[in-house]
Length: 338
Image (cartoon, rainbow, N blue to C red):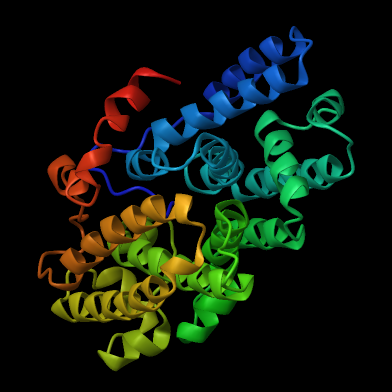
């Protein structure tokens, strides 16, 4: 599930062939380069292209990070974007999706055992994974976090219902969003006067909030894929039975259930924001911009009385309103460079 897209511009959807062609094009450049740093830079540019093409909002907020951290965040995004595309966009059957995810997981574990980015590439590891694994190794990020992410993607292939909020958080959101927040926490860093557990807690709360906003924004789109992320306990609160869910998307009670879930998300945004200062100072602008932007979208959904079929989004002017004016100059530069 893409937690980082709320533009009015539709997501770009790349076919498996387009992904493979880009992979081969970048791989050719990597193989012709003798410098390890140059090879890594090519991987970063690849990941940046993926990010810019698939999430304008997250691309914008990451421009406010220092270059080294921004590069690493882009590699994280690339590593989660491709599996997400497998389950959401590739026009293949469930067996084929699971096979691709299994192979991706195998490549991930192979890359963790290599001595360098070049070693991973030489062993056939996909470029985005090879770059991401270097981030994992350099920050000593627990390797099981990414396994949890892939488990959530596998669950998207054969979705199930969730009985309550705790169920959906622990058995889906943990893998789809919380661990991604943990990846970023390791990159963003924390202050010397705060413990890392505080930073992780803030990341966890923000990850839950972002994913819940994603749920309430995409109820209709998820329903078309046979997925229900709204807990059944919340549906029952408004007298909606699971068998009727897909038939009642225009029911006013569904709007109430959606808005109730958005209110829950707002609570997690508030909790995350309380501990923003535990993050390294040079990361706070990007985190604050991300929080403010998606919180604004969540608030709009929370107050909305329109049909679930109409997906809420923010305009460019609304996005800019969440960014510091002193940093606006970074945006045109970012869009001129890859």
